[in-house]
Length: 96
Image (spheres, rainbow, N blue to C red):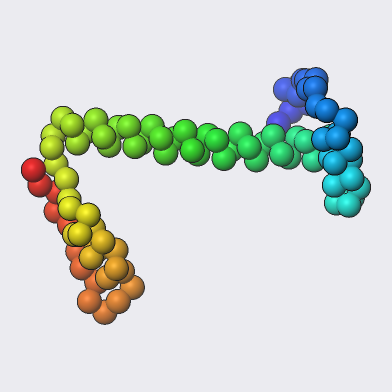
C-alpha cells in the first residue's frame, strides 16, 4: 500500500467503545488507530471470504438445478470418513 493510496476516514463510536479500544491498544502496546485499522482489515478479509463462499454455494445450487447431478449425503459421508485411513475411498460419482 502506497502513502498516496491512504485516505483518512472518520467513524463515530460511543465513548464506552472508544475507551475499550484505548485500553486494549495500551495493553497491546499499539495505538488505537492501529487497532481499529487491523480490526477493519480482518473484518473485510473475513467477509470477502464469506461472500466468495456464498457465491460458490449459489453457483453450485444453480448447477444442480440445471443438471440434476448430485451425490448422496451417505456417499459423501462415507468418503470423508475414509480420509486418512488405509481403506480411503474414491470420491463419489455424481449422478441424476
